[in-house]
Length: 525
Image 1 (cartoon, rainbow, N blue to C red):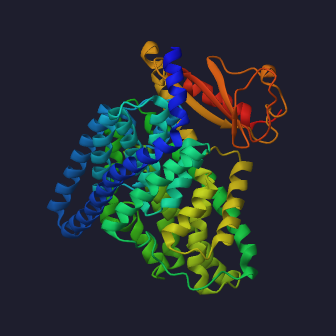
Image 2: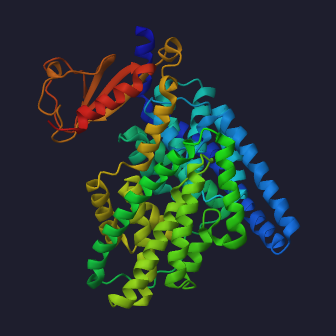
Image 3: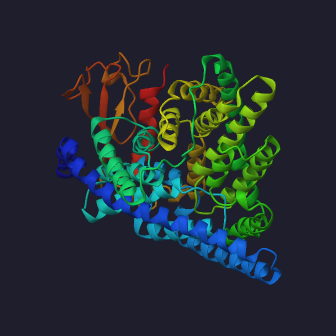
């Protein structure tokens, strides 16, 4: 045990150098896999559009298409039963594994998520590519770690690198990939994780942009800066998208509950409802199918009137809930951005009639509402701000983006709405119960896991000695870094805000220790 522990510590000391090379490798492989997934989804969308155009007004072909949708539901249902970890977005599963609360098998998740996500988008479900891309990238990192026979600590770093690479390749947003990996997945900052994640993200983005091109995902024009006389409207918009984000989180979780109430519905039955709903909407309102990228184009090109925007908002929202609640492999990231855009468009159109807003600023509010809605739902404001200016290709809206995002964040926090991915992870853990981490105690405890935590101002650890603290069970404090210098903590060592603590524990206790240490480092008396 001592030999295993000392080896883990020595390797951790070389992390900044080792992880640059490994981050590069994860970025290359993960970027290629996500790029292939992105291309496959574009074909799925084109084929769906061609099929719907062909069967229009032909009853026999319409019936045939519905039979195909039933078959798709059966196939995806079997994939979900074979590997339950592909259900839903994939982001909560990655968060759970990085924090030691879940375990995934990359050999099963990679093919099942890829095929399942493709079939769901081909069937027209209102799902995004970002969640699956992040999970595919993270599983690539896990696979490379297993092939190279790395320890559990290093594996989690590589999974974080893969998640960053996945988002970067999916959305041509390398900075957002870095921010999301640190802010949402790893939930901690260190030089080692920053350098490795940045390497993976930039590498994946380079591969994606080299093959597909440099055009931003949302290539709509912003004619002018938003004048400061309209900044009062930004606060109002922030409140609206904050409340809307809280309702969105509640609705998504509620629909999941409703799906699971009928005992006659298994994985395939729930998916059948979603696919048949997509079939009906494909005949009467095909624009709401899929991720909804064309809706942004129509909105920002001025092709929609207020009534149309409100109708699309309601139908897209309900269809997104039906699609995601079914447990289909697909994300909520992109659809929620579409919903945010519709809210911003409707707000701006009403503003032109009642508040004297000039029409050329409608697109500004579309962009701002997307960032605010994302922040209220995910509770990752930095990622939302960076993501939107990268995806739109515009850096002129940073101040207004910040105002709307911070306002939405405050509103969602005051309404006590938990971040959506944390709520989803909690449900997965509740469903898994004993499977969460402790299925095979002996096997799970074989490896040692290192974690770093930063003491925040006002935490219970600040200005207290090591010996005065009740540390988590089965956790050893092995190092303390202060002002760039590392020291060995002793009983009488006084802890200070900004200190970086390094702990070591068994793999089976990693999730428990992570939660306890975060509580110690971040909460006050």
